[in-house]
Length: 363
Ligand SMILES: *[C@@H]1O[C@H](CO)[C@@H](O)[C@H](O)[C@H]1NC(C)=O
Ligand SMILES: *[C@@H]1O[C@H](CO)[C@@H](O)[C@H](O)[C@H]1NC(C)=O
Ligand SMILES: *[C@@H]1O[C@H](CO)[C@@H](O)[C@H](O)[C@H]1NC(C)=O
Ligand SMILES: *[C@@H]1O[C@H](CO)[C@@H](O)[C@H](O)[C@H]1NC(C)=O
Ligand SMILES: *[C@@H]1O[C@H](CO)[C@@H](O)[C@H](O)[C@H]1NC(C)=O
Ligand SMILES: *[C@@H]1O[C@H](CO)[C@@H](O)[C@H](O)[C@H]1NC(C)=O
Ligand SMILES: *[C@@H]1O[C@H](CO)[C@@H](O)[C@H](O)[C@H]1NC(C)=O
Ligand SMILES: *[C@@H]1O[C@H](CO)[C@@H](O)[C@H](O)[C@H]1NC(C)=O
Image (cartoon, rainbow, N blue to C red; front, side, top):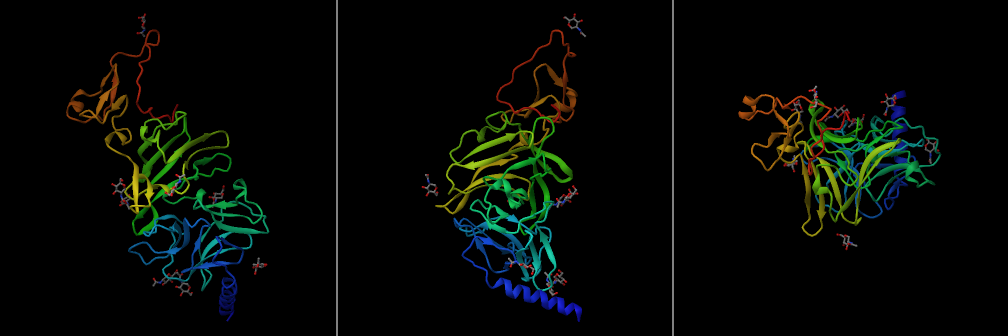
């Protein structure tokens, strides 16, 4: 009896509060809910959010995708690791500023935005911004610095322009891209893309078991060392910030109507692409890793990798293979050693240009 009363109370709640919901708006107010089958669109019409099922799946996920792209390219998933198996779900904003995905029939919560923030706002609102960022903020405060929560801080497998890739050193927030398991399952896959702040900060693409797969060279003031294709393009600019509070990079599109995204796909490749409205297809800007030399530690200690030579590995000047026989057989895993021992009295430096800097985690 008690249980059915509770159920009834739940039912009434959702009957009452889904009704006044305005679909013209890009926002959800406290006690309002967005049920499965209804959608919210950002004010520029670029992004849409609601429940979806991946191609060959019946599971229901709450996510954000490009509204005007017919294939519905998903950029963010809330309950990626806890899908609903029916259409009983809704997204609701609670009075104390928490977004939840729940079963409207029995009230079971599948996902919650609640992190470690204490919200003392009386007036929370959840809004899908033009950038594709879903934010919770005070209704009277649009300052991005005061957002209570934002989906850009909890990315799935996609980085959008304006999203910071990296760490907040004060709060410990770490924004990491994680691949989907496969095309039908957005749950956490084996690959991640993250900023490592040890030594001189670098970005790493990691495979299963936290094994380095690819390293982006460190920021050299203009671009990431070892990524010449990034330097000049007409589509976006890079911004890198490193101070006591945060270390991150972000991209800014030059024309905000151009869709640009960085995806860590489920086979472990980073793909940056832009949407071509005319051909209705994504145009690849770059893919990483790209070729043997992009594989982490491909030529081992004191080796140098050149994709244009064969074999690709050789030793730095004044170094020789540690094991000549292995190297001759095409196995460079023993790396290189000095030809003569280091003598700090009269040894100097040899200049190399146009190369990616070595791993700077210990520098
Ligand atoms: C939301 O629901 C709670 C609990 O029923 C109620 O106290 C609060 O006033 C409601 N808020 C709004 C804005 O309707
Ligand atoms: C939602 O709740 C109803 C009633 O308890 C239940 O029959 C259904 O299986 C639930 N669905 C999910 C996805 O939990
Ligand atoms: C759906 O999930 C609920 C729990 O969330 C479970 O009780 C129910 O049996 C599932 N239904 C199907 C058809 O798998
Ligand atoms: C909240 O903080 C605790 C302790 O710092 C941490 O263990 C936990 O993972 C945090 N929870 C979330 C959701 O960030
Ligand atoms: C993830 O890695 C594990 C261990 O290497 C492997 O067994 C599994 O098949 C991988 N999963 C996917 C989706 O690639
Ligand atoms: C920006 O991009 C849109 C869509 O591709 C295009 O229609 C518009 O002319 C561009 N604006 C500028 C200033 O290049
Ligand atoms: C991931 O990206 C690579 C490089 O662009 C591509 O070859 C591969 O097919 C992609 N995998 C998936 C599952 O889309
Ligand atoms: C280093 O070079 C200097 C000058 O050639 C020589 O006097 C010294 O013995 C060398 N030291 C070592 C450790 O080889």
